[in-house]
Length: 235
Image 1: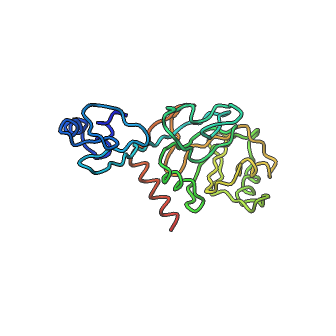
Image 2: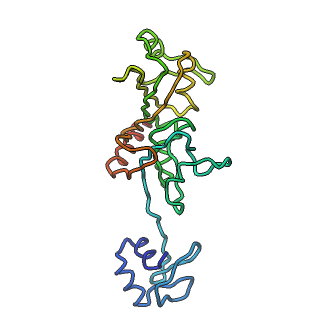
Image 3: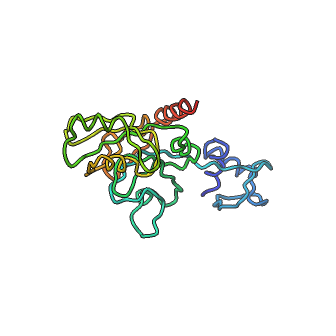
């Protein structure tokens, strides 16, 4: 990274102002006064007027539509395609809210570890909403029974919401737990086959009209609202 950009980011000033600092002899790199526009590498010490600068990498927040047959991870030992294959390789990103290999839909992707923990940690109980396509329409009697919950191998589970959508083969289900493959195991307990599982919302963040493999930046309002939801749940 160019040293003027490094200074501008660290001091929250313009690059033109950072250029002036360099020309005025106020900048040093690893103890040596900087006289030109050089690159800063990892581990380098940059000082302005003898004060060391701390570079804060810009934080990014994306809503991403994970296609099926893609791993919700940064890497895969089997060489399968991962979520991070859709983003710049120079960004160290975190997948927020995993989806299994066959499932698709909304993932949040960020380099903000604190934000990721806020969304993923079980204590914050962020609601996640899904569309489930079943192999046949579910009768009202079965749907009512399912909505009352069931005891699974890792404890009792009851969805927050379970209802029919406009399409008779699609069910809307909302949960606030991150238990492994919980929706698939829940439907299996009632001998209902899932043909497709698609997440459409995480808290206030919605998939909307994103296409498979595409992403959009979250707005500041979306980020702040999700943080407020998490903090309210934690109280």
